[in-house]
Length: 219
Image 1 (tube, rainbow, N blue to C red):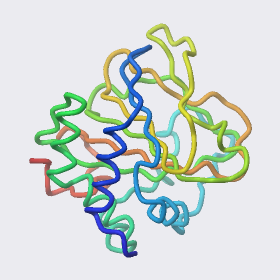
Image 2 (cartoon, helix red, strand yellow):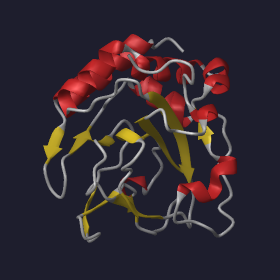
Image 3 (spheres, helix red, strand yellow):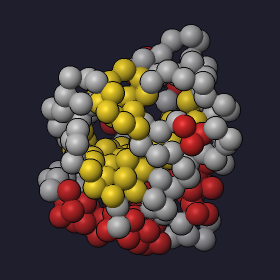
């Protein structure tokens, strides 16, 4: 791992600068190439097994026992997890996100989930409103057919309104609100759909072991 947290921070900020901003059905940002290619490839190659859905889906919390995070142990074990987390914990990235998106992240905590979705997976429309102050869905897998596996976007009445592009290094970013419905319509998933879910969460987040820096709030 030769890419540093500073390299990742620079790539993220530059991609946010040139991101496509859409105001409907709610304000969201579509990013391309948001970090060095080598970082995306290393994340995609992390040695975590994809969970068995056992025929159950609709909410990620249905499989809490098999979810994976860039938590303290995984940061220590995998340099790419450490550099990625350090970039999002950095004052430079936090300040930019606050200025660009108008989010107040002071006192929040960084939570990074490594999601691996297999055929049969789907997610009902939900908003992330509550303890999540920022959401970034970063796509990292590059298998044939994955270009059709972007996040589904819905309007306030939960009617399908679009789908984010899926490509390695592409991302969907938004500040959770009462209308930020998103999910994943059930459709065939070749191989393993891999993504990284980045959130800043309030101090009310109970599962402290999931946090990248459980003893270090932002700011």
